[in-house]
Image 1 (cartoon, helix red, strand yellow):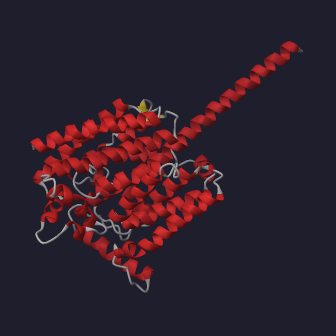
Image 2 (tube, rainbow, N blue to C red):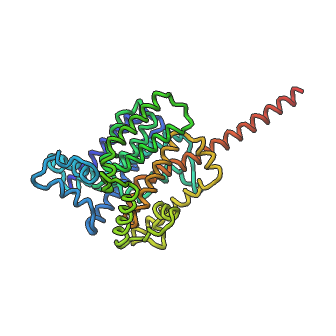
Image 3 (cartoon, rainbow, N blue to C red):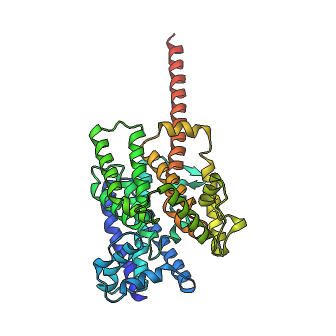
Length: 403
């Protein structure tokens, strides 16, 4: 436990070095906010650690597996769960990290995800937006408890969230952030190959349909990079569902999703989604559990958060959102594509509210970004309209005086 406390302090000091560099590149960067967020996230590390002591947790298996005798570090190099073991191996076997220290390390990975989410949102949307009268939109989404709970432990949740948020930040300026772009793509692919598919498709569609005028060579570079990556990764992506070598992908995927859904629905917090129409499946993935089906005390807390998600989502359920979307930029269209494709895929295989709570944490920030951008655009349009009216009014007054 002492080692974990020391590591928490060392990582806090490392954060200050990172913050200094980020402050020089981003004038808006707030060290105070990010330090507050670090200790807030660390609190949820303590909450998850306490939870893991009295409940089954994958974090214990992720700590034990890399210690299996007869295996070297390179033996664990692969996709999905294997990659987490590969990532953990040197810290456990070479640096002698104990379980608590590994929890701290991976919680820090999750925190870095929030750090880059902040940069992604703030750099792209400089306008402050308040919701529910007094709440700063960005502060609200950065401090959602469920997001911190599932990204504060040893497992896939923290590093995949980190990879996704670094990618979102890097793709805004791919030329100057190519290192971050490659690193984040690597992390996403090796942890969840199918999510890399959604990210690649979302990026390509964003560049194809965004309102910005992008140089032809830049578009070609993005297309070749993402499509080439998909071709190289296709076996691993299909292997997630056991479809590598399949001769009928559609039929085999339907069988896989049906079997997976049945298996998950048998657990304590299972819901029978197989017969749900698609809109209800998506609603379940995005906004459940709600109070009427919350699995335990944790579910009740998550229900409050899900209600806020729903209220935020309702803000884009307007006719003006369609026209906004048509004229939106690359990041908005990429974010919406990644969010929707991920949600669509998950609805076919998720039938357990506990797993849904954990899985959706990696993609909800893409929805929040779209909502935030839409509200900011609405505010900007209103301000410009008022300025235009005032300008015209003043011009008329001047014309009246002169005449």
